[in-house]
Image (tube, rainbow, N blue to C red; front, side, top):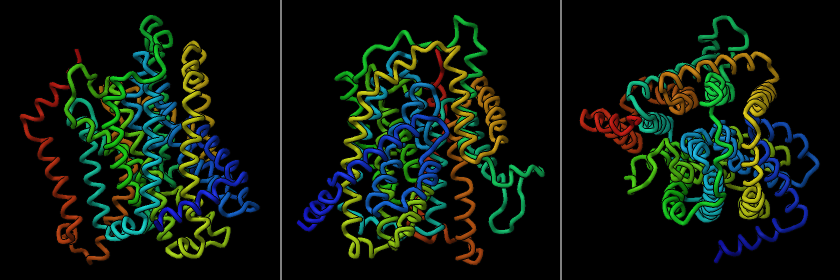
Length: 503
């Protein structure tokens, strides 16, 4: 009953005209920046932070939150239609979403992403409302050793993601880890792998790699084809909504993705991203039903599961920020900054000292998720119309938008040249048959793994046994070792390679 009383208070705050307007503005902005490649919620919230000075604290946080989870919706649009992950958490959606679009099923793919996101967002908000205190206690038990073990498990899981050769999958992960080392060492201040290039002292941007490898690489590959073989699927788009069979297949995947995202979203280090990779890994391990399209060739479960997971993860990532004052990712760090600007101290006292803000923000997420479905589902037809634009006009526009998005991140023209370079790298990956998704996961997790390894070593005074003497860390490493053993077993390895042989 206490939860119901709190939610009644929250909806009373969220349903004021002012807060409804700001929720709509946040959702609309989030969708737009998710659709535009390269311009993520981090840059947008950072730019809009000064504009929140004159707003009420609740209105400011409602708008900024709408931008964050709205971008998770919009990011799937470019991932499906033009093979560009608008958001880092949409990297996995590219694998099957784009293949569905190639087969004329862009509508069902977009609808599956939108409906899965809506369901997961609502459940994630419910988890946030009901389980914030106990779930925060679980997250508190994670120290540096546990985080490192979790990330090792994530990288082993990334091998499952990659189609084809096990050696290529491992190579992609190692390359991603190496790219993550470029820049200035946090502890010593020494430049690493910068080769005396000043622009590399801050490292390589995720946006640069994602836009280059996925976006420019695909464009170069298409331009390398003759006109009759070029990637054109505009005349094959059929229905917009998923069929009854699609719904039957995607609903269990949505439920699994939602459950994974709700749990992993609480953990620091990009819960939405890890959730989408984990959800896709589990779907690939689930047996295909008769007549079902293989993963990597346009399976609707490969869209519904990661999109559900990243939206559930984006909602539950508010738990450590609101209850502990600990931001689990960079966007939540900006949200903490927004609260500080309005003289609100993030942490356990927010729930008791400022219940209108806490429960008003939670209630606004339900309203925001409904707004996003109303915004996105009618727009599916418009997004598909983009595919009718001739490719000779579309690819310069994609190149231009990518360049603008990359430049706006750091206001640095060097990044545009880097995108072009990674475009060539992406084209080489296509020719070599390498799947770049594990590379991006390795790139993101690499610096975080290094940081947590150093922290764990400092706490244990150089004793490596800390990773196996702490129960949670040991359990995660055991699961990782078991998964690696399964992947490396010759019989399973042989079956795995046979499963991905193209006709």
